[in-house]
Image (tube, rainbow, N blue to C red; front, side, top):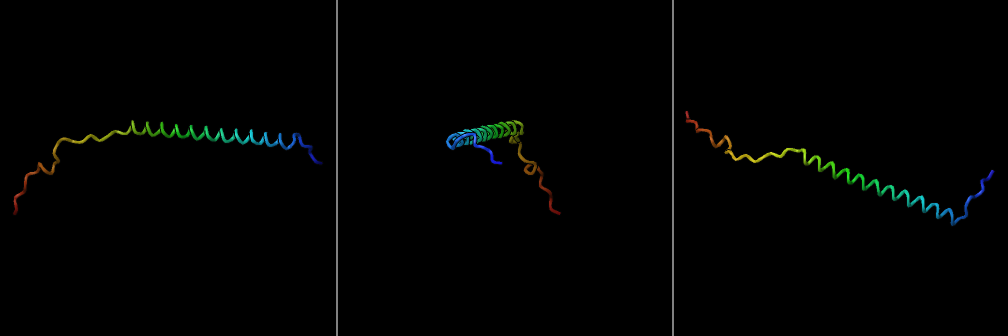
Length: 70
């Protein structure tokens, strides 16, 4: 048994365009959301990482006393 077409070719093209545009719009929104989440995660990681403060003390090697030769 053959099904009848519910719409002519022009209506089918309009429907296809509507569906296609909707899909691409959704993909674009998902990409924007993922990009924002990635930026937020990087900000949080950068904020939570403790930074090593430069030491103003001279190193221990310079403070050692020279040893006497045997």
